[in-house]
Image 1 (tube, rainbow, N blue to C red):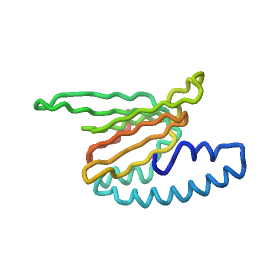
Image 2 (image 1 turned 60 degrees about the vertical axis):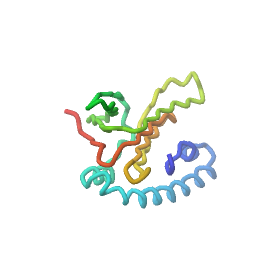
Image 3 (image 1 turned 30 degrees about the horizontal axis):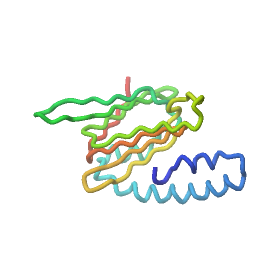
Image 4 (image 1 turned 135 degrees about the vertical axis):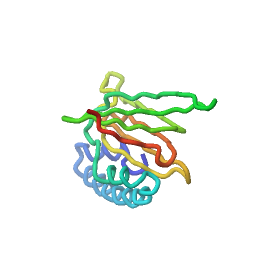
Length: 160
């Protein structure tokens, strides 16, 4: 995560009031910087998806499932990623087609801590290069997803 770092999120929730104030000030600056970067994504995500992520957050949703699916098209191996999350009254699936990179971290500082991914905390959609976008998701446990995918190869659908 470039802007919404796990260490910063932890500092905001620390018991040290001065540390909280410092972290909250840094978070506000990072938040402004992130949304400045986000403005560059409309043509790369598509207008509908751009508006969706600008106006909707999966914050506090639970990770239900993630699934990597490999298929073969004309002798080429294609990998897609499906992430399903649930809220209090709804369920969504994010579909990343033709991913070029996926990373999953589960850096628990306490091996007795078995929260798994825990709640969806924050996420960042960023430009990697002229053809590739990145979506990074930080969960409350400190776990995270990093996905690289080509322009307009992300879809979000609400499940019935």
